[in-house]
Amino acid sequence: MGESAYERLMHGARTPQAPLTLALAGVLSRSGIAGLAADEIERLRRRHFPAVTAEDAACLSRPQEGCLALRAEEGGDLVALLLDHADTKDEDTRWLAQAVATACLQDNHLWQDMGLPSRDVLSALLKRYFRALYRKNTRNMKWKKFFYRQLCESAQVPLCQAPSCAACADFPVCFGSE
Image (cartoon, rainbow, N blue to C red; front, side, top):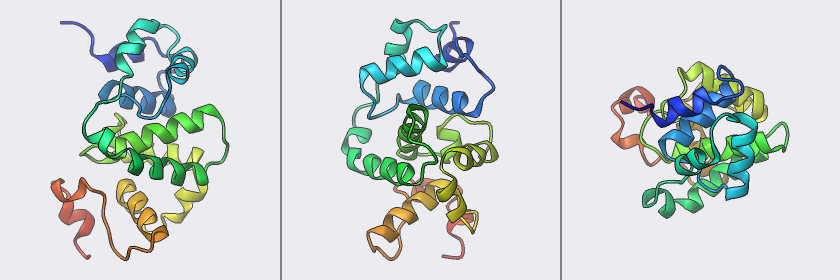
C-alpha cells in the first residue's frame, strides 16, 4: 500500500511539526487549495515541502471541481475577511487564508477539514496570523460558524450559518441556544 497524499507531503516537509505546515498539507492533500496559481503552488512547495517533487505537488494541488467552483465567490469573501484581519501580508499568510477558505467549503469542522489535530491548533494558527479576527471571537464560537457570522454581519444579514452546518452531527452543540 502506497503513502497517502498527506504522508507524502509530510515526509517532504521542511518543518513537519509546524501548525502552518500541518494546515497547508491537510488542505492540499484533501482538496487542493482553491485560488492559487501554478507558480504560487510551486513557491509553496519549495518553501514548505522541498523534498516533494514538483510532479507530486502538481498532482496534489488541483482543487476539486463542482461544489468548490460553484462557491468561488463565497471562498473569495472568506479570503478577503481573513486578509482584512491579517497581521502581515506575506505569501504564507495569503496561502493560509486560501487554505482556510477552501476548508470552510468542506463538510466537517474546520480543524478537521484542514487536517489539524485539534481545534486548539487551529485557534493558535488563527491567533498567530489573523490576530484581530481571532480577538473578535469573544464567545469562542466554532471557527467556521464565526467566519460566516462575520460575513453575514458585514452584508447586514441578521442570522446565518455556514452552508455545511445543517448537515453536521454537532449542529445541536453549535446552535442549541439559537
